[in-house]
Length: 218
Image (tube, rainbow, N blue to C red; front, side, top):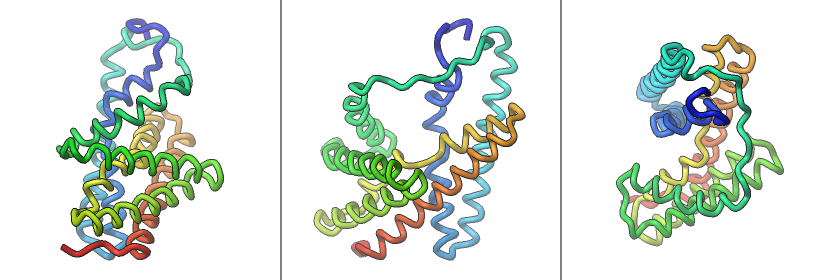
């Protein structure tokens, strides 16, 4: 990029749009379809797909209008140093609380749930692959949040929704659509299909968690 030399355009775009990517809506629509709510699940899935396409077309239009400002040789993203992981994992739950308008006194529990989700998905991905790792993390996180709901007499969603954002493949699906717009058909289809499979794994993990540790009825 000519305005910010040495920066990756894909990282900057995704960092700015990640809050708008409807990864949670995709998971909820899959859950509704999996539990037999076909009408609401289909409607939510169609709305989520429309938002994905609007975001992708908006990025494509911005890149065309940007012209020479955004032109430049493609730069591959590089991994951040290992020491940045600790502050990121501490700040993310706070930002998730702001998004869901949670209470600050729930920060400790949200941090614990986020660390549990990150640890399980990291270990599961290395041992079993990204799809099975996502399912394992969803199962462990869902069971832990149901136990929290039973002990604290509060909804499990208080911890489940913020921590679940770490596992959602919304960025993967968005990247697949942008690849299709840039005529990278094979890579785009692969990224989109992998995002769908990871979402299905998350859905199955949450269903197994609810069967293993039933939710508390209020």
